Length: 277
Image 1 (spheres, rainbow, N blue to C red):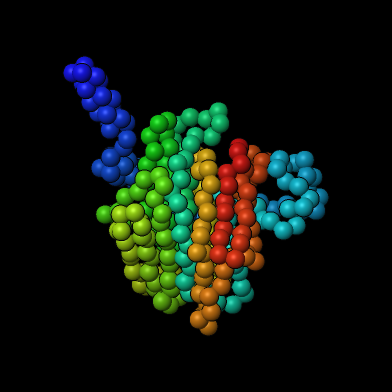
Image 2 (cartoon, rainbow, N blue to C red):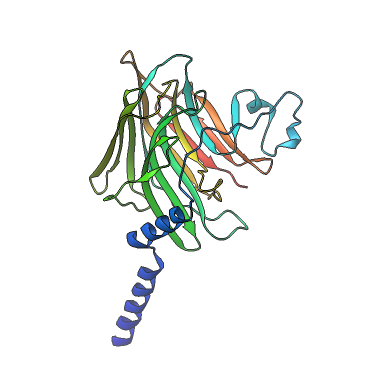
């Protein structure tokens, strides 16, 4: 009995040391920033596919989706776009996934789920907030952030996550140069927020629900994030109307001439699935 109890304690202690602590994750982020590597969302980096592009040139591309889906190196998800100032708030709720290293790859890999305003048809400023997922061998970690591009992202403190947590992310523009980013973890009941002012002007053209390959001195190695479904997904307009993503433009990520995500939209949902590199 004593030996079994001791063995159990050793196993638990080993497991505890295998998971990065909040302090260790912070130290990692501080080290990256000291090296000049900041975490930043970039505007959507389009992959242009013309009528002369052969279907065989991009694995996973077919004629049925070629006309209705756009492609990017860094964004997958759904975007509502208008040609005039339209969107004031965007919100969505998703379950924190367990990221994995892509097949045949090892080392640190990342993905991020967020909601935002602008960055597609208007790329001069983006108001956004979300959660990063990181995988490195058996180590999985999560961090919440807020950002008003072109500034780099900043980390929220005082909020933690684990796989399976239900999280709501919301951005609200109080003006074209100010607004608020909010994240709530429904399991813990913890809510964090940040208020912006005096920022570069938004266009308020785009509302987005995105899974991203973000930048840290270049696009980071992209994780197999499994599936992220934004539920209760909606945006409000300057006229006070609430709209959903059913008719939003779908964006898939292309890496090494292969489509590696699949997006589906509903009246109040956006599902982004990793299909493989």
